[in-house]
Length: 159
Image (cartoon, rainbow, N blue to C red; front, side, top):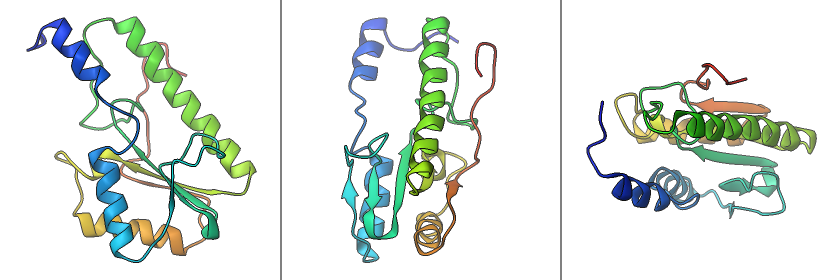
C-alpha cells in the first residue's frame, strides 16, 4: 500500500513524535494522579528513564508506543519504505527494552509496561480498567507486568 503523504511530509511527521508527554502517557499520568498516586517523571538516574517512577514502591511504569517498541498488535505494521532501516531500528528498541528491564530488576525495581493499544485503537480497554490494572500492580508485589498483549513482533532479522 502506497503512503498517502509525500516522503517529506512523512519525515516531518515522524520527527515530530517525541519520547515524552505523549497522549497515552498523559492519560495514565492524569488518571493515577487523580487516584492519589504521586510519582516522578523520566528519572535519568534509572536505566531507560521510565515514564513514571514511584520511589517509595520501587516501581516504574513505561508507556510504550506500539510502533516504536515493536508490539505484536493491531497498531503495529512494518513500514513499506526503507525496510532494513526500520527492522534494525525496531529490533534495537526491543533489545534495549529487554536490557533495561533486566537492569531495573537487578536493581530490585518492579516494572509495568502499558502498551499504547490498551489505551487507543480497536483493542483498547476502558480507561478505568487500565488504571485499575496499574493500581493493582503498584499495590502488589509482582516484579514485571504488562497491560496489553505481552509480546513483540517476530520476523526475519529480529532476535
